[in-house]
Length: 434
Ligand code: FDA
Ligand code: NAD
Image (cartoon, rainbow, N blue to C red; front, side, top):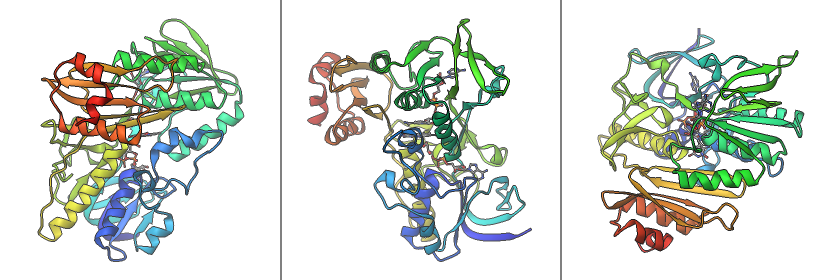
């Protein structure tokens, strides 16, 4: 079988991969030095579009419109860009074996890719209900969303089941964004999740109350405190019923499941240090194996701001970690050093006419400011997280770019707060004066 050798290989074709390729090119690349290997059939794109504009009935996003790096406000890297730069874009190619010590990757078709430096950017995969043996979970029209092929299947079924019934399993990012997308497409939507409120990883009960109220007003039926324990299907094997643990049965033409992701680290098990479910790196995304880096969803890295180590499954970190790793590789070649990664967590989501941003850490006491009544307009409200007398996290719905900048600054600067009461009264004014 063919064997190829590259100075740099990026394994993965998602967000981090796209931003890493651009960073290599900024530093100057010789043709043939870099290969990007992806099991997807398309060049790297901005994954967040898949749960948003990709599914809209109007104003739909399609490739090549959202190739990396448009999401970060940069140049759109079309497939031609890679060939112009002499970067080998190896698509529809799954790596099934990685030997980090002999610096070799093997594809499902048996091709061998040798590397001097490797960036692992394999991202996450979805957790499936079949993984826990949920009865009937392999029925047709039960969908997950991770890659563009999944989104295409969803687009097709949304058209085929016009005005039908959808059940969304999971109350996290996918659950909230997909429930909205299905509703916008005029499906009848039930949303089911086990927790007492949606997005418990980040939202407080007060924040969730707004989104649950807003979704309910849009006609989405929310069922909390229970899980799907089985699915019934028709003679064609298509899902028709969702059986809940509390005994209720929901009708369904489409089921969308978003019950979390799992970082794709299996190829490297036993070869590299792992921690918190990811590949352990230093502040330059260097792993325990020489010349091997890990970025994006798979990396467990030092969070300098909080003095601990974390894994982050969001796009801003995917972009920034990729750039940091490439800068570190290039600097080490030149015998130079660069600053440690000093990341400020930034998460966001959009659905209907809503749009929120969060910066910092969501620990400590919380205080709400603004108007979080889902019936009122323009839905401007937020939350500060306060720990040891300092504001360390901030959330804002419907902020202007300046207001979002202000809450980001608060989370970075961590100013002292007199009292929760004062923060509640001052609201955005507190952030704006920092
Ligand atoms: P990413 O998943 O982007 O890429 C991994 C790539 O590696 C894929 O191309 C995959 O096919 C490839 N790969 C894996 N194993 C391979 C193998 N063995 N061989 C070859 N190729 C392999 N975040 C946010 O902050 N705001 C948002 O709005 C959203 N929205 C959003 C929507 C949807 C639908 C998803 C699934 C995720 C988001 N996210 C998000 C999260 C964000 O997209 C995510 O954190 C980044 O895409 C992570 O980037 P990575 O490059 O690490 O993985
Ligand atoms: P998530 O972790 O955000 O949410 C999973 C949800 O499923 C949780 O509410 C959880 O309690 C619930 N759940 C778990 N088991 C369940 C069960 N058996 N039945 C019903 N509910 C169950 O994960 P996700 O929403 O699946 O997202 C997957 C990945 O995609 C994550 O990495 C996420 O960060 C990323 N993503 C991010 C964004 C964004 O940042 N805006 C948007 C979409 C996806």
